[in-house]
Length: 223
Image 1 (cartoon, helix red, strand yellow):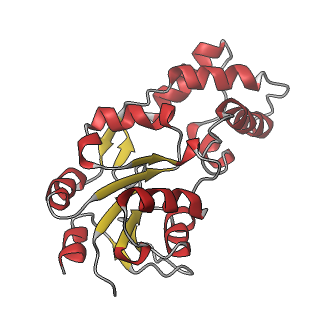
Image 2 (spheres, rainbow, N blue to C red; image 1 turned 90 degrees about the horizontal axis):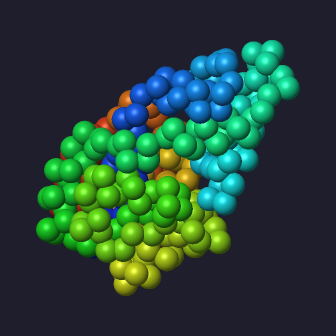
Image 3 (cartoon, rainbow, N blue to C red; image 1 turned 45 degrees about the horizontal axis):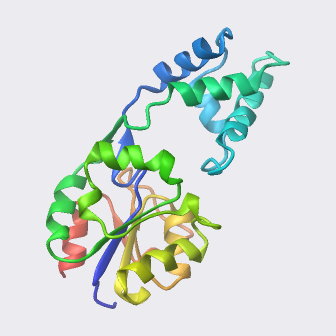
């Protein structure tokens, strides 16, 4: 295994989780839209496929509400009003660190260069970065949603590697998505560490490291 000379982190689900209660957000969505509530937050999350496109979050959400409305027998429905209600109700800054994330950043930030690569556009992700106060840890921060292609495509990974001025084999990417983070990092030659605190197996993917706690990352980098 090549030595690790830099570490690049994913954001959502890796360094932070959303702390705005899902039911509170869901209820506020319907209030803002002036529509009687139907369905549940879990139904909406299941209806949404992957991350929202950086340029059409409204359409992405509307599609999810159309699906839930059909499941609940509430068609036709003004799905765009519900999407607008969701966007007005969501608090992007309502985030908190995942366990050990802040400690790990403090430790590794004094040892190796750190980068941040997140799939969302800056207008959605920057409030999270600011709320956590983590911008000083990273040089660079890459918002892949503002690039022509997002993870797992190579372009965002190549962009962060170029900014770090480091060879891919000497960099480690840490993320919680096998499809987006692990496949994407390995596809451009980076080492990968999959953050999976629930203990599920990575099959059929093969990350170089599996982290049940972010605290384990310190030993990986310092070995």
